[in-house]
Amino acid sequence: MSLRRRLLLYLLICAPVAWLLALAASFLQAHAEVNELYDTELIRFTRQVQLTLIGLNASGGAGTMPDSPVRGQADLDSLAIVVWDRDGQVLLADREGAQLPLRPDGAGFIDLELNQEAWRAYYLQSADGRWLVAAGQSLHERDELVYGLIGSQLLPWLVMLPILLVAMGWAVRQALAPMRALSDELARRGADELQPLPAGDAPAELRPLLEAMNGLFERITATLARERRFTADAAHELRTPLAVLSAQWDRLRGAREDAERDQSLRALRAGIDRMARLVDQLLRLSRLEAAQGLPHSGELDWPEIARQAMSEVLPLAERRDIQLDCLWPEPPQEPPNWQGDPHLLVVLLRNLLDNATRYAPQGSTVSLGFEGDRLRVSNAGPALSDELLARLGERFHRPEGQAESGSGLGVSIARRIAELHGLTLSYGARADGTGVEVVLARA
Image 1 (tube, rainbow, N blue to C red):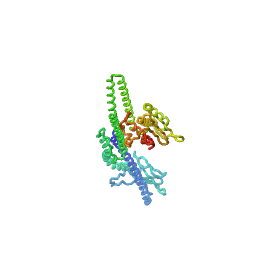
Image 2: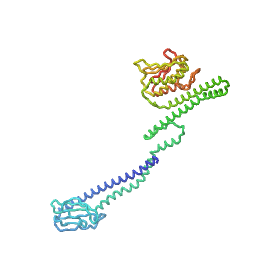
Image 3: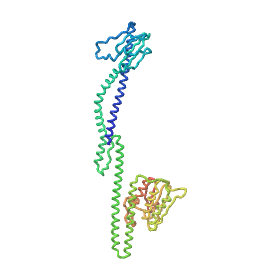
Image 4: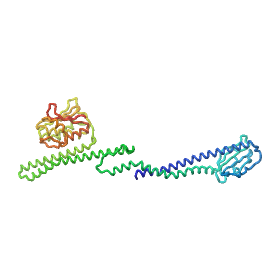
């Protein structure tokens, strides 16, 4: 069921119920007011009779009140009056009053039944006890007045209720017009139309929804951008290795001597290794760019992190005759007291050590140093120019004349991991002006 139909259903149920409750309350209020009015009239009527009897000599015999020949629209059959003396003899009574029972024990209101009809009577004893006056009235007269009052109000309400319901339906439709406009706007959009929805003029109830949808659009846009970038990067970077592998395979098939075949196999193997490393780096970079926070965070075991990172780089260091040094701070100094994900920091250090090992002069030293508030990775060799330092970390950028294979993604991955930990990477020459030194410190 739609929101509009649900709201209309609630209103169509609640409005008549509220109307009936208001009608019942009006009936009860009118009934109480009418009873109060007529009870007051009965008291006033009996007092006037008492005063009349005081002014007259009421010691005569019983009498009957004459019926008025001119009634107008009055209903005298619903009224009764009777007067008794101290001996209980009727002094004065009309036709209905003669049927009222004698109550010599007191005064006040009493509800009774006369001729199978409900009546209400009021008894008033004179101060000297000479007579007792009673006045009664049929309750039908009171009910008739109450029903007349309610009926006069009921007809306009019955006429206005359908109009009210139609007006509420129109009001609900107009109130939900922004929702309908929003659904139409989303229905018209294409799959790639992810521009934010305007939320400034929207009703207050819709703004949280619009803001959440705009946030979702932004995340989808970022995800699509990452996927397109990953696809473009993969297509750009894999095109050359695939062509090289194809050429190396053709060369291997055409090799006729064992030496030529062995050389082609080694080249093919190196190409496959480079392809595997490139794909692994692309996937790592894609996952890190999609990360919104650290998967895990806790105390860091720096000796274990350094051991894992250096053990992964050790085969490359042995091949190039590079010595890996790990420099720990002198007591009482300790390594940086940082929180983070140890697996990601292993990847970060491995990439830094891998780059330093690949581009260090053969037979030199690569060092990993821990200080109180930072880490340093450095190698020997000539210092890099300012232009090359500025382009470090640029994806797929590698300086010309490099003998080692690579994809230019290692520094990008290290920078993204550092950002997730609130750290920064800075590059420069060592203190003696030679080599390259990478410093990892708090942002």
